[in-house]
Image (tube, rainbow, N blue to C red):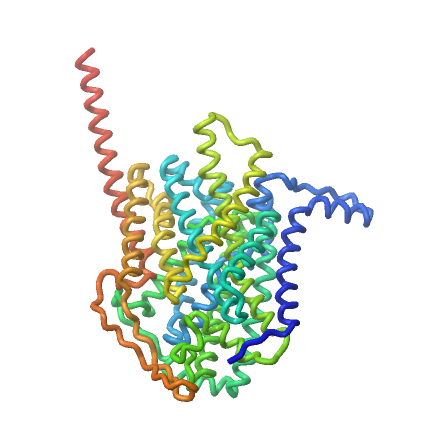
Length: 558
């Protein structure tokens, strides 16, 4: 079908870009703007926040309130990757992914009651500072480098997915979409710091909500009503795709989604600097705890809406699967294609949809850029500078470096995003496996530090490196030797091209690389626990023997 845009679509798209950029500008010049307003309205209120303070840039002076933090905690990882990937999940495999709600119910309370209080009470800037207190500098540096690798890849992926969607629906070259998305996110993050990131997250969540509701309503109306969608989905077995098999080599099952998913979610909300930075920005610990727990119902609702969009897509394309008919190049382009078809000839809405995808990307990219800049400055540059020069970086220089690192990180992710164009279309499992394989070791070392007091610094180093090696081994092995996943039947009977799309059957022999990507975090945690305890015991006994031998030698010599 021919896809054309009305001038109002471009206007809507440009409007939201300007809004996001304006938020960054406002928070960059927040102090002089407020002073000027106070003068105009004859107020004697004095601004307490200094604009040239790294704590303001990274933590908003630790004065952020509940509503923006709740929205920001959710929007940070409600990316275009999850938006497009979850819709495709329901379309191709059914709604079994809804069981991730069980994972939310397990992981969020653990993050609120075990992990967050430790970081908040220490009044840290970077969560990795805790690792230096607990295990020493080596563990902090290793964990910081692992985090940088993890987030650099993830935000590049989050940048690539919406740029691909924009390219697909508008005909713009991919490189233009990548540069536009990356430039806007880097602009307002660099200028406004954490306050700009948090408040744009609020706006982006509103745009996402409005857009998803419009897609659902229009799709249901065009299909013929909610009962028709339900009946078609039932006949296509999209509603009965639940498996209670304990087999860990399955891609998904109720148990894998509940318990493996809980580990993956906990690695994000309990051990990831991006989220911990939001908890540390709250005005008190009670606000931080509420922000985490309120994300259980909010994430559950958004997950259900995204899966419902996938069912609407299946009902709409019941006899002409756009994937099988080659109307879209990759399965993850299903959602943008659905919108282009649903709102054909309706001005403004397509531009709003571009804004939705853009909002989903910007929330993740800006949050990642801000947290990466924090870790690079606080955990890598400052310790290295002190090691070389014997003194700390001056406060004014830290502010300039924070801005510089934000800009450099944002630009570098654009370059990496170009590499994802040659990868598999199934971006959701890749993104989650990345968090399991790389985020799992970071969560593991935090967990050992908080809950296992017998682990010493040598056990901590061994646990971190061993769990990272196992996580990368499983993740890379699964990419190099992928296991075909059976999909539910799809039809192209009424397409203009004659294509038969049936359920795909996995032909390859299952191996250790077939283990579900959601189990990567629990596996890393188990490996870290074993190596941490064993190496701690070995070095403790070794040092004890050395100490006894030294005492004996001293006594003999004396």
